Image (cartoon, rainbow, N blue to C red; front, side, top):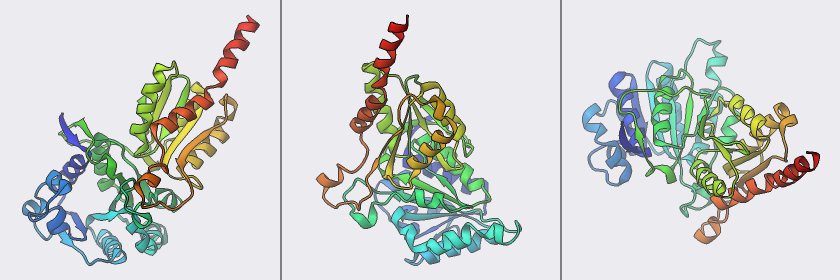
Length: 344
């Protein structure tokens, strides 16, 4: 085990994959110099190390500044035997290649009767919370969940980022990995040896008995902070990190809610048609009889992200907002206790 940052774990996983399989290549805008090469500066390049010197320009490829071309080239490369990792930078840039994602990457296996595989990994970073404005602050994973054929990954820790990326590279289907850049500096002990984390297996980050908190991506550390504070108030919160959104480990979530009887879902993305809405619907369908209080969602409102730091800070879930939501669903505990006393 060694201490790694989130971005360092991503780099370690990519290096392992490239050393293990010569078909793995990295492509993207300015990846030769600014990110994986010798002339770049900054945190990401320092963490990832000098890939260009180790693997050469045949496997670290710059692309034109055209997301549609980048994604299209990666799909074609995957169909002809390579296993590309595509560095797309801002997640908002994915919109420029929607036709390639939706009509090519997601549908090719089906359209060719299973004869084709699309083993390509698309990495993108969500830069919200940094005053990058409406054009660069999106958290678009919910809309891609609506596209059959895509696997959606949202790691919230260094160890998960490494293990999930290795699984993604092994997959024969297109995988979209959404990284919360606010977590890039997060440190954790990570296994230096190769390992993989299977898709569709949630991680219970904290056990509890009074309420289930399901937190998505960058909301996980906030939920853990809130759970710690709630414990001081006598509320035991179970925190679940789904890790992958497609496939989604609904069994772990439903089983937890059946024990706790309460659910709060925390998602930095917009409220309507989001991950929180989907998880709430699943629990309402499969564990309604176990609920002791209404399901509560803590999300961002359905509005564009303001550039002003003071205004933007009010948009997203916080530990305080999560605490308030949990206390609202746990308010029924007092009445339950008094009812039990009166019965006895």
